Image (cartoon, rainbow, N blue to C red; front, top):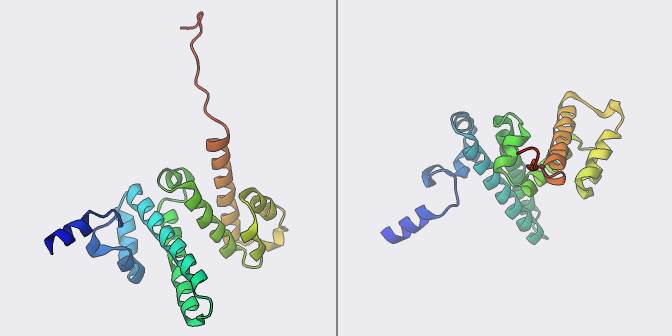
Length: 183
């Protein structure tokens, strides 16, 4: 018995202790808010990654449930709540894309932000099929009448992420080389 519990305790599945895992945060939103407020960026990014992995697993489960409508509804609702938990993590990091990018892989951020854009622009389901720059261009081409305060923030945040990608991935930092006349 002891060996099994030691093994379980050693697994790097949760960024928090096993007695307070992500399900507890999922059920008790007040505990989730309190924990986010008193923890550091690493903890917050760990939760975001953990929830994003769970979302990915749920998407695979949805594909496997072809004929079971009740199961699809339950999984879709849980998945939506997990997205909201991820976005709460973003908010806890003050929507600072640099802090988020330090702890969350770019591909996870990409999928989360794509979903955030879909939440902000529900009348545009075609955005799910587009690449990052195509989403950016499509949002930029929208008439101003389609923007509210909320989805304008999402558009701004998405644009900041595109700029972050461009700055960090496209343009390598240039180191100054010493010359003979300038040691």
